[in-house]
Amino acid sequence: MTPVLEVKNLKTYFRTPFGLGKAVDGISFSIGKGETFALVGESGCGKSVTALSIMQLVPGPHGFIAEGECFLNGKEITGLSESEKRKIRGNNISMIFQEPMTSLNPVFTIGEQIVEAVKLHHKKSSREARDIAVGMLGKVRLKSPETLFKEYPHRLSGGMRQRVMIAMALACKPDLLIADEPTTSLDVTIQREILNLIKELQTEMFASVLLISHNLAVVFENANRVGVMYGGKIVEMSGTKDIFRNPMHPYTIKLLRAAPGVEKRTKPLDTIPGAVPASVDFPAGCRFSGRCHREMEGCAAMEPPLYGRENSHLVTHLVTHLAAHLVACHLYDPGFMSKPYSRPLGKIPEAAPLPALPHKDRETLLTVKGLKYYYPVKKGILKKTTGYLRAVDGIDLTVRKGSTLALVGESGCGKTTAGKAILKLIEPTEGNVIFKGCDITRLSGRGLLPYRSLMQIIFQDPYSSLDPRMMAGDIIEEGLKSLKPGLGKKSRKERVSRVLDMVGLTPDMRNRYPHEFSGGQRQRIGIARVLAVEPEFIVCDEATSSLDVSVQAQILNLLKSIQQDFGLSFLFITHDLSIVEYMADEVAVMYDGKIVESGTVEEIFTNPKEEYTKRLLLAVPRIEVA
Image (cartoon, rainbow, N blue to C red):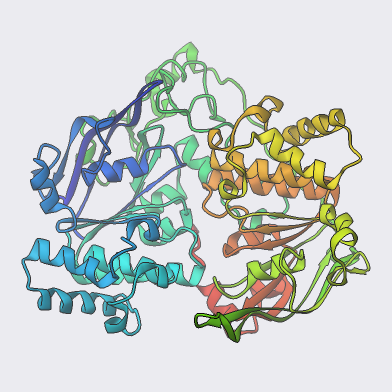
């Protein structure tokens, strides 16, 4: 049977001031009818550029397909004219983009945007196209589709916008659906609904899916086959269960070991040192050299071809080996392994176990009693207050010294508002926050100033929380100037260098601007800014959201390490329950502004009492390789 999609030796390059960026550098794979094929790997590996290349949306003139072919139902599509490409986009191939708000036109209603595609590709009348659009909104389980047809994107929640994107992508019944991080930053319950919805519609329309994700558990539960990308190339490919149970490439092994879980609570997560090399500066040999724990002397000089697992035979026509387990690593080349340059360079030592302190013996640092925060609802020209939105409606929390309390729940339940109210970044409507024996809700101005350095926050989005006009060193030093006025200039500079080193950055990076750092490095700057003022309590608001699994592991290890070294306490706000299992000592489950259940991690995860907690836990994707 002819595959729905067949990619052969695809190369997509970008002209840059620093040279030719080889974002995708010779990859091949195919997707059968009704199959889900997943691409995984860190940011910068070429996953999204692969999707844009298939869609023929590579931004020119700097970006271009240098070589290779893409066949859709047996027809080569890279050589089509622009008018022919427009006919297949949205009709034969559709794409669900990572961020639906930036993909939907804010000046048109969602109904108009779906109708536009149906009228263009299926030549339907306005009434027929409207009926199809309303029907699709109903199929993606949006309530009152007739009403939502007239709504604008900004009036919908993130989960609703993602459903609209799915409805738009499937309205013309495409042969291939490309889902680029379709559930990033969504709650586990909404994530589960979105993925189930894609599966159901895929079955109904017998469509094929290319799934791009950094969430390995999502890939395990939803993909038939997996391709692992690194440095613009596919380094391993096989059936999903085979990849997860018997990973062969050292990069795949490291990715899987970096995923958090309850069984890893007693030791740091396995991490991958360094970062994905820039596409203009790939090594001459294996692109994972320099980061690999199995590296040999010849790896950096010679590029490994793809080998089949069974007998280490060289694979020359990848797309004809759909059932094989393929890997690009010298470890599986008998010829390479028989040479002197196969000597190992050295092994990265296993992470040492973290010493555990009995949680019940720790002192109470922070107590929250009856905390409330209400947002006024204003209407009319005079903006008269007509009511209140009860974002936080009387919660009680206790955080012990040197421990982590996880605050979990769906978006909109009040988690972030609670974190800000505890720190008095917003003024609580009612309640008490007792920190080290002092009720800080009664303090203001100068009285609150000493507690500002002791109680800090790491924000969800490090890029928007860092001033783009300031260098990293100045961003960190700014807090010292405000909260530690007794420190001299020399002492401030020394402390900035010390905390940069503490979070795994070099002192020379103090002279770079935020845009010159990767996402993980920017998060480290945010952590360094907090540590510089010597806090005792930190609110981590989705501190690892949207990070690659390898970068996430580095940040989690860093947080656990500084907690152990300095006895810090964390209020960890997150929707990722696998992180909660790894990081937290206690858990508080929040719903509609209230705490509905709380207890130790073991109690909540093994014996939940509330139906809402049970639904949250059932929605968590898991890797079960036994």
